[in-house]
Length: 152
Image 1 (spheres, helix red, strand yellow):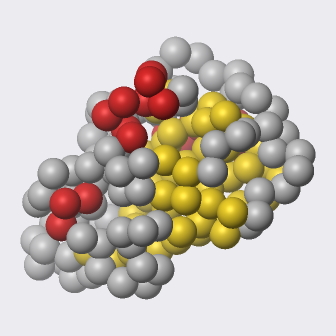
Image 2 (cartoon, rainbow, N blue to C red):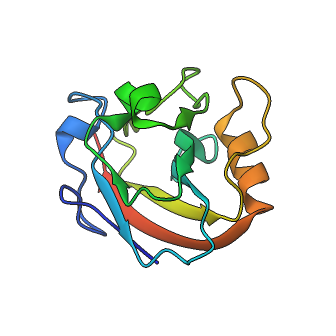
């Protein structure tokens, strides 16, 4: 399985519009090669370089298995797009773009796609990104990663 983007290049700087310094839009993401048994997907974004430990920017889950991507800004229209979102480490539902401390150097932002063997994750209302990842790992059949960099 492969995760890509028309706006992000693996290992390159994330464009400003997808960060807290820009429009804070979720980037367009596309995937190919999902296994035949994939019934749903989870998209995660985290920053392992954050000073206090990994910072969770986004968890989109219960993405229908027939999807092959999410459009730019899809986080702002999750209900219409047919998926759910967790509470991120900014304490809000949805995508929170890269926003590292100024002068802290480049941070790595890992966009991770998880293909799952179930349609819906059994989660309580308003789960955290960590809750989503923990539950998703129990049903994981494939994964892919796209990494971008950002510094302020």
